[in-house]
Structure formats: structure tokens, C-alpha cells
Amino acid sequence: MKKRILSIFVTLCLLVVCLQVVAFAAEAPEKPNVVILATGGTIAGAGVSSTATVGYTAAVTAVDKLISNVPELTKVANVRGEQVFQIASESITMENWLTLAKRVNQLLAQDNVDGIVITHGTDTLEETAYFLDLVVKSEKPVVLVGSMRPGTAMSADGPLNLYRAVILAGTKEAAGKGVMVMLNDTIHSGREVTKTITDRVDTFQAPIVGALGVFTGDKPVFYRQSLRKNTVATEFDVTNLTSLPRVDIVYHYAGNAGTMIDAAVNAGAKGIVHAGTGNGSIGKAEYPAVENALKNGVVIVRSARVGSGIIARNGEANDDKFGFIASDNLNPQKARILLMLALTKTTDVHEIQQMFWKY
Image (tube, rainbow, N blue to C red):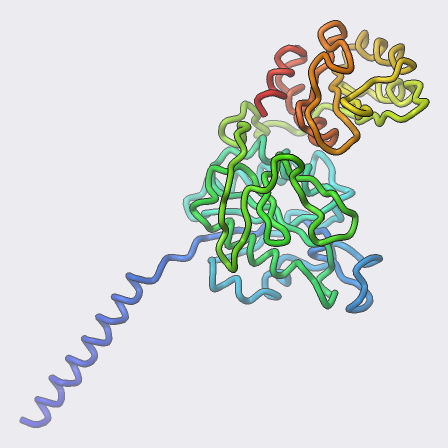
């Protein structure tokens, strides 16, 4: 009799334990599935000493090592990594962009992927972010992350940046906000962010408009959203593209006689972004080269070298007369990206101008 009572007691205890485990599992939040796509950059770099924050070698650490170096990632998401390519970002190509964009779209179409983090060098991070902002076809979070110091530095910023980027990519509130950039606890729109300082961890800023949000502890907090159309709301589709039209940037300076405009035309440019002085000014001596470019069917966008601000249409040049396009507040490198994609759809300057107002 005692044995039977003991057996029943043990069985009841096991049942209680099992019910508690089931209840805990039901209450525990399901972790998001985040894919980390690695492309190289300083975040994957290594220096010769712990104090080497310049003169290091970029793009030497593989994605699996990046992930294992931050074991805390497993607490906030189910993560897996892919090495898309491994280069310093100043050497990125348009073919790299197309490869990356297609892989991002493939992954985001899968039900078991909730968000994507892309590790990237900071030199062209803003360009890749804006390109993806225009061609990704999902509202799921896509976050670009990098670092200003290599992983071997005693004050490396990469591990914490990566950790917070994974949290952001797995956050439901981050969906529908376009492609984002996360460094230094600050969340930026891929369209609006730019690198402003050569060597500081707070280098990424969004002039005039500001950040989307910030991290407070391990929680992303949003304060605004970009109103320009992005991702699923754009007309751009790279699915069947293997290349992009050539667009060059020509920098204006005192005494510029248009030589670089002629060189771009002779090299086969389909479009030119003119990084003008002030509000996108074009020097008088440049106009013969400009008119030759226009006669050859080259589309010209006026932007500015000053770093921020809106280009006023028909302000510093007669845009209507010459058929120029005003870049709105896009800096030259981002205006180039939009012009490349626009030229895959049309060469009509009126339609392209509308794209610059829209995106």
C-alpha cells in the first residue's frame, strides 16, 4: 500500500513539473530568426595590436567567427550567417550590389526569416543601404551595420553594434521603416544617413532630418519615420538585372573647365551627377561640356558638394531650359544610385525628376 501511494505521489510530482515546463515554454517569447549576411569591412578587420585603430587590414574575419565572438546573440535571436563576399567596402561594385540585393530578397521571401543584418564596411555603407532601400521587396527589417574600429582594438565597437543590429532586425516595430543603418546606438534611415567624420565612432549622421531612433539599453526606440517611398513601394526590380547603367560623379571646383564631364561622356556614361558648389551651381566654363553631354543623350543631375541641403529646381541653373534634374536633398553618391536605377526604367528627364521627388 505504501509503495502504491509513493508511486502515485511521484507520478503527480512529475505531472506538476511537466505542466510547469509546458507553461513556461508557452509564456517564453519565441525568438526571431535573423540571418547575418557578411560582406567584409572594418567590422571584420584585424590590426597588428590592440591600439591599432588605423592601418589595419579589413575583411579578414569570416561570418562564423563574427557570430561566435558575440555569444550573447543567441539570447536575442536564432541567428545564422552567410558570407556573401569579403571585401573592403571602398572596392564594392555594382555587381556586388545586385548579388546582395537578390540574396536579401530571396531570404526575406522565406517564412522562417524575420529580418536580415548585413555587416559592411563604413566607406560605402550609406550607398549600399540606399540601393537596398530602393530595391528590397519586403517590409521585414533589413539593417546594415559596421564599425569604425577593427575587432582587435581594445575599444572595438563592432561586437556591440552587431548585437544591437540583430535585436533591431528581430524587432516587430522595425518593420516597414525601410532599410536601416545601426551604429553607435543610433538608428538611421538608409536614404538619409551619411558618413561625416573619417575616424570617429559617431561618424554616421542624417543632416537636417536626424535619426529614426536610438537604443536605450537593449531596446530600440523610434521617434520618426522617413516619408519617402522605399522597398515594396518603389518601382525598381533587380530580379533580372545583371548590370546597371554607368553613372559618373563630376566634382565642381574653382577653375573647372568641364574636362571631367567630357571624360565621363567619352567613357560611356549614361548619366552624370554634377556635385556643384553652393546650391548645385554649374560653372560658366563647364557649359560647353554640359551641352555636349546633353546632345549625346547623357542625363545630368545637379547635386551639391556641401554635404547637405535641398537643391532648388531652377535655382542656380535653368533646369527647365537644359533638362537638368534637381537631386532634392540626396548627396551626390546617393543621387547617382537613384539615377542608375531610374535609367533602367526611362530616359525621360521629367519622369526621372518625379522619381527624385518621390524617393
